[in-house]
Image 1 (cartoon, helix red, strand yellow):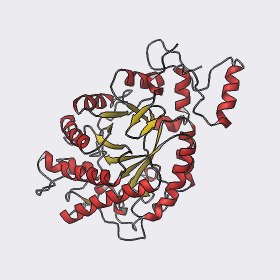
Image 2 (spheres, one colour):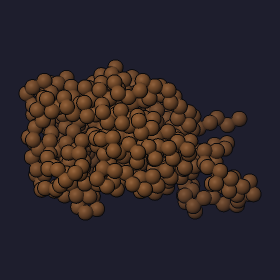
Image 3 (spheres, rainbow, N blue to C red):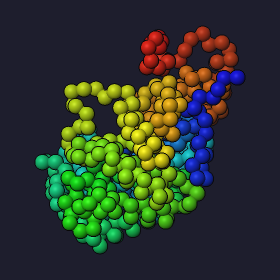
Length: 393
């Protein structure tokens, strides 16, 4: 009997069991209207659940309208957003997949045009909630780039109000039916800004020492965990290293604290603190270039990790898990290229019943074709990235 691929073994985290270890990474789509999700989000997230993902993550959803990266970000700063989100969670659940939500705040990196419109900082723009003034805030009055506006430094009472806002958003996410929550502490956004010695120039208890710079993130996690049911998993996304002095050692230190505060999985990304790339701009990222960070955090902080970053092929993802480098693999842009990546991986890794997670309206016909002796391979076929692997044909 052939051993089940590690990629397709279930994983239980608190009270949730994932049917496989394939996760749709949270990806911003900039399709919301005044913070509200639309039919776009139902289609976008639903197709990955239909395609067999073990966990579908919704994009960064903001706890405060000031924290929107663009005017088209999703929001969760008021109850009005719950019905639209609940429609999405119901549909994803009906396809046999749990769904997660990433909670974020862009801080000094807020108020930009859409990426395909140049991603330029907007000098001014009506606020996302009701046309209010859109103020940039951050840990200190330090701009994210020469082109960006200087944010106003948050006062201590405002920081404490922000912590409360994260907890309230977590409660709304629970009421909307989400199964997993992820706190976004990476990519140069607000929590990462507080963690950074470059962006955070404060001299009070939220700045200076590593412990002080970690304080806001830790308080947010404590508040989120207080409002998020004990049986539901909590993830935290980190930039394991960044371009402005952030080190893996600091990240491991943070992850040890977060583990004690109720975080279950660390989502391991990198960069985003400055306009410079974490890798040389003239070089192509290597396959799985961020996986070493997930491996080190997993070992040194004794916490489950999720690897992300140019994980493209099924055998590549399988090797990451079998080698103990991470517990989950998150697929992002490759899922945009192939929403049925999980099905494709099941086929290539020789899963005994590759169509089992598909709805009958798809699985029945694909299984029938396979049993009829289909004399070829799907159009996406490529066995992997190792030497001697078969190229697409």
